[in-house]
Length: 220
Image 1: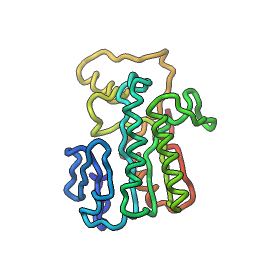
Image 2 (image 1 turned 30 degrees about the horizontal axis):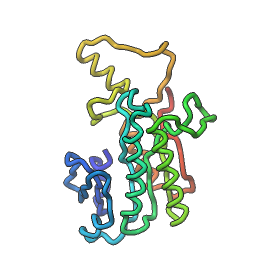
Image 3 (image 1 turned 45 degrees about the horizontal axis):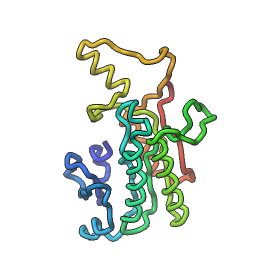
């Protein structure tokens, strides 16, 4: 979504991706396999320094089942990728913007009483990645902005995700019966994807002193 906005016309932007479909004509794409990031990827392009890093990619759960411990190996790669990304950079950046998740909090905590301590693999991987980034930022005097996003929806969502809005829209269009799990009292804060992009770009421009914020819709 950020690349489609084309907001970096005066900057040299490199898109690190493992997916060929992510190619954008306005960007230099650097491809990698199996999280094998290394500094030679940049050196081959003649890149000597990086000013700003958007760390947005991650393996995410598509279904409720994928939150279980059976998928720990999948989310462990999020931690490996974060570590490899930092070691592959050709220089120490001035700023890093990291897309984290409210999944880092304990289940059942809410409002101003959120407690850190996820019990599932995805949240654990985000929490560990945050820790790696914080240590790197402190050691190298990097301005780190961590955005803990709530559940998102919007255009471009891959098939297979069982999020309520996309699931309901698909079922309504197909004339299928809607199913609500639980007693109907559970609330979710749904954040539109382009609103998330605004926060990401805003964090990149914001030079005030803060490290971590929750980002979600105002109402659940």
